[in-house]
Image 1 (cartoon, protein in one colour):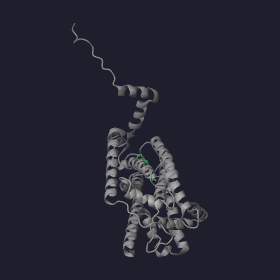
Image 2 (cartoon, protein in one colour):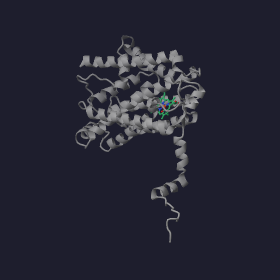
Image 3 (cartoon, protein in one colour):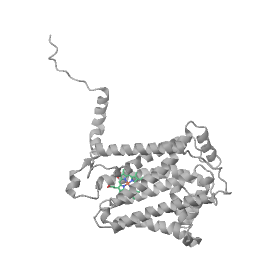
Image 4 (cartoon, helix red, strand yellow):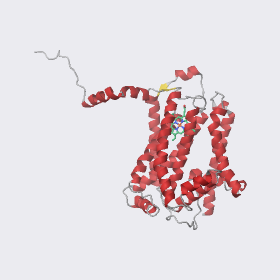
Length: 371
Ligand code: HEM
């Protein structure tokens, strides 16, 4: 019998069978098409990677944070010892803790980059006002992570930065006293403070971030990406790409680059604790984490001296600035998105960024001088 004319039928592999089984019940192919075939007006760009990179950093912070919780003890008499144990005894514990520490810095840098990108691209304008507002809440959460995480190692730096931070918060009219008492849970930072900061850091803020990031993405998919700020509608349409493959590859390169940067910093600049926290600062000059340093330096200016001055610099000024940011999409109704045709926006961005940079550098120089 001639077997060469027999039709050859290829049997689906086991993986294909499992995929077909799940697809039939879940609709994987439709989901995949929905997630990956999002049009990117004007084509993929490196400028769009920051949102995805932020999500990646958050996931890595959650993973490293959970691993750290296997060893960390959130009590005033064991927090410092358990952190030292992680650094000196646990296998690669020093790397894990240092990664988590530098990861928080990377998140702050990326949130500033993402905010700058959407601001300069005019992506906050109609119909993306709500994406911008939810983004501002996410910004608050990222800063909240930094503030609450700083206390957890329970060394002098942690204790005094928190003391200064809570004292500043106390100056807020109406709510300040309540917020400061709620966070401290006593006259001086102690067990209650540590417990509350820990719960906020590992439960409240992650839950809030996950919920709000979901809402942020939902609103983003609803409005669609804003696309480039230059070019006619036809030009932008002609260059439209899909999220897969070009944008997704750029996002992955961004994630890998940030991951390598955080790993390198954790390796070459691992975290070192000061002495265990005591209510006596001794020679130590309290200061907050670097991303709050500009505000700390601002408060050293003569105009912000005294009780009222401190209120102006620490509460009123940042409060007005955040309120202005929140109102921005409603004040700026002009549909023009080209940053070179929006001189006020461009100058404001340069002034804000330059001020943050100058005040941060001044605070670092001041620190060297004090030491
Ligand atoms: C944890 C913080 C944040 C995460 C994880 C996040 C994530 C994202 C992602 C994944 C996108 C999709 C496109 C892109 O990557 O550009 C996006 C878009 C956007 N985000 Fe965020 N974001 C965060 C914070 C913020 C902040 C602080 C703002 C501004 C106050 C903001 C405003 C926007 C706007 C306006 C868009 C739309 C951009 C466009 O249409 O081109 N986001 N965000």
